[in-house]
Length: 105
Image 1 (tube, rainbow, N blue to C red):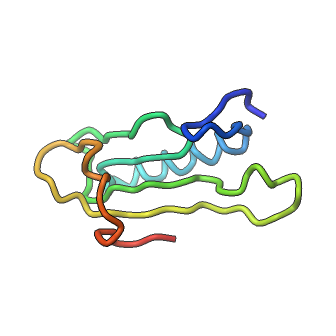
Image 2 (tube, rainbow, N blue to C red):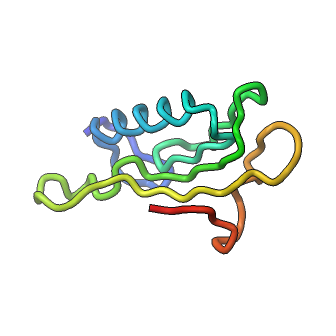
């Protein structure tokens, strides 16, 4: 355990933190994302306008981590929306209906 709780109140494991950093760094470096929302982060991550791409991604970097000690499946889950508003990224860019989703997995 990392000794903290995530945005949804779950106890955070060290593997959650590592997974979160890996996913965030990969998405930031891709330069195709404008907004990132992680279960492990209290606030959305807004990319600088100069680095922002056209997608907004919400994700749980390691879903099922509370069951790791039971030897059950874990994985990353995500949903992707296309940014439709002009200007710099903002949190409202990702607060959209599921019918606007471009992809999920």
